[in-house]
Image (tube, rainbow, N blue to C red; front, side, top):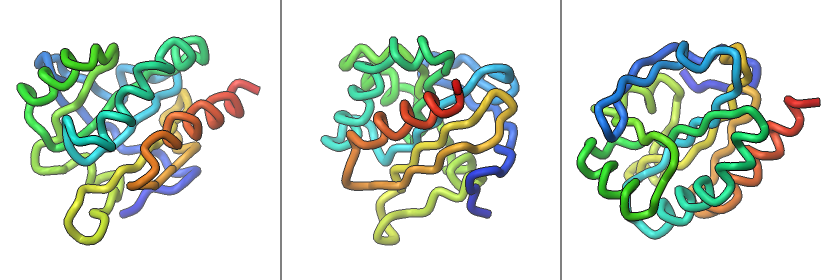
Length: 151
């Protein structure tokens, strides 16, 4: 199933880079930016993650949480987050179960897709932005969607 705007996001619980369990139900009542990225420490993913880092205060001002998701393990996520001083959790998506639940396809049938979702305070999908090669656009698209929600 591919989630589209207006769909209810499935509840989930995954551990982050520090072993803390994160659930969609934990952030009910506030918007969530959930960005799926292919791999820690690759050029495009680093640009994207640092873009979310650099705009993190804006996301917080818009009342939103930011969570990154990839299939890399906790130790890889921890190194990536520490190296780039990422202020938000990176979720460990073992076996890409969450990626599958959201319908994030592989690009070119090989590379895990780069897709950003903005969920409103009730967990309803308000943005699906899919652009493997334009990592910087994900941050701007997410901010624009959150500004629309705030109106």
